[in-house]
Image (cartoon, rainbow, N blue to C red):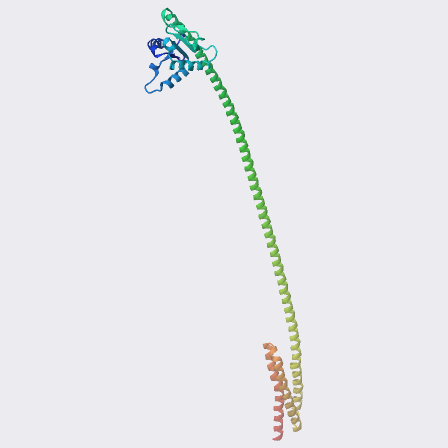
Length: 363
């Protein structure tokens, strides 16, 4: 029997026939009063409305010890008691060797069933009742120690399993964390590489665009320079052509002016020198003739003057028609005065001759 209160009470199932209920009830109370035993009988544990068959089977399965309260009623009676005995024996087969699980307790002098003859029984009646109860408590104490040891081992095993599981989980967690860290580092590395690659691509793209832009600008500059050069050459060519045209025009104009000047000299020589010469010659002749008083000379002067007047008129007409439109304003003035002079000389000679003739005739 335990000297201190154990961690839990020993679950004891009391298997009995209904005719032995008074004696079993007394045993139930004695065991319950021990403080470390939790006995089970149907009249105390079953609740109204419960399925007693299922409850009894569950109680047998969860019991640490099964006490078979044997009497002539339970041994010779057919029914559920025999079923409980067989069911308890099946459960006992699952227990480790040396486990105290089935305890036959004779309530009176009776035969022990064949299935329980291999288990040491005790007589709970007569003079042996007190000693049998003490022996029963000793067996139950041993069973409690077995149960507690088994549960301790089970707890230790479970604790070790839990510890191993936790260590395994911790290891798995650390491995998972390490794997996650490696994955995160790998992901970060790949992200960094991807970012670096994208930045490199962007930089290369910007460099290509900058190079293309510079090439475009250089091409545009060269095209502009070429266009400016062509424009300058075209302008120079046009300037040269214009200058050549101007030079040609100036040359033609100069040649034209020289030709006009030459023509004017020729005309001047024709219409100025010759008429002035003739006019001078005729003026000298007329002056010379004025010194003669005879009528014949005056008639000769009158005739030649008329002839010269006709010639002078024709010359002035030809000079005006041929020369007047091509000369300047000053030359036109000179032309007019020279024409008047050329015509006036024969008229003067005619007038002098007529005056001389009239003077001769009337003197």
